[in-house]
Length: 190
Image (cartoon, rainbow, N blue to C red; front, side):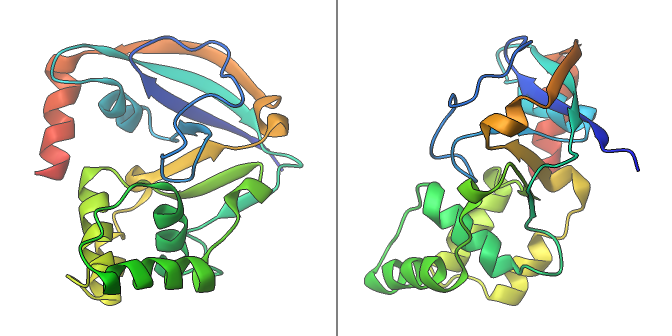
């Protein structure tokens, strides 16, 4: 069985050697190196309205990695929400929402730091809006679940452990032109 996968990281820079322990703590699954199996999606993530970016390509050997697949039948949308509210900053508008956040963490939380690799939905602006609406009692869990069913283009792969970082190999990059990829990025979420 082949344990090698190709993953991409969209960035405003070329990253030949991803560094363990770098990044933003308030990302969806906490500190880690965020990638996707879609080169096109990485290009969208890489650009802004002001600048071009890069889609960095890597080979990752997943053999022996402890992998959390938040989109598997073992987990529900509530597990994903609990992980998200544990890491991302949310606008909590009332005491009920504050209690809902804590309830999710206490009853559906998953310790993502116990895994080498996490695979799950990406809470970009559109996903994040749905998650925030759910937390503030604006939509039901069924509506949230349906909103998340956008397929692999909405998934991210996050390297979490030093061991996972030791299994990644840089393969090259492609330039992501803002004139093409920013338009596609905006169209996806409008």
